Image (cartoon, rainbow over all chains, first blue to last red; front, side, top):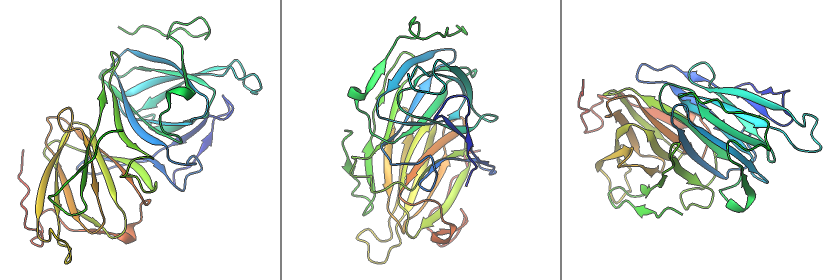
Length: 157
Length: 157
């Protein structure tokens, strides 16, 4: 199985580098298995495309955990920790995810704010395998330019 | 939830058209939820890229079911039923899967031979959410040009 690295940057965020298995017809890319420590239960798997330079932010889930990979293109993922009792309260961390250099899974536990920006030349795609299926009741949103989160998305275009 | 259509062409194969939800930053694409009739249990989710015109074939799983979607590009999926007790024994069926017109999930039960060819101009990508994690012991392969399967892959390039 692919090895798992804890992220020490934000409490509860876990990063797992993933295999890209070469094949003359096209590579096979790992994402998530039922024997992974990052797998708890299956909620839903879906994709989100993000056009080059554009931003989808901010979101926070009260109950649902995210398991994100970027099998197409590249994104900048930004996570903000404003959980009052977190050891990393107040931290903002940027992660690059994508192909081929940063092909890895990132596990985001509930109650963290996150958003992402397409930074590839073309459209990028995020795959998300959650532990609960979609429920708008457990989700919160803020606009990308909110003053509640001390981060400024850079316009790329 | 996205509606489900039974495929009457091969016994046990099920097709589900999936939503592509428009968004000004990039669409969200459904794949599979835990409350779908197509979801039994979670084994593994992974991706397989296929270069334009090339073929990955043939494979058969003794135990594992496949749930395939094509979130990037387009493929021709071919399924061959040589199960002795099947009502559709001997049938070969071609399915187009991909974006934007044929974005749908196809469920392939065990013991069916299948293979696919990239028919988009660019690289295509298959996502597969299986009910058992990868186990080479339960998998069989035949070469694309085997005479055991009455299908000839067309060279596109």
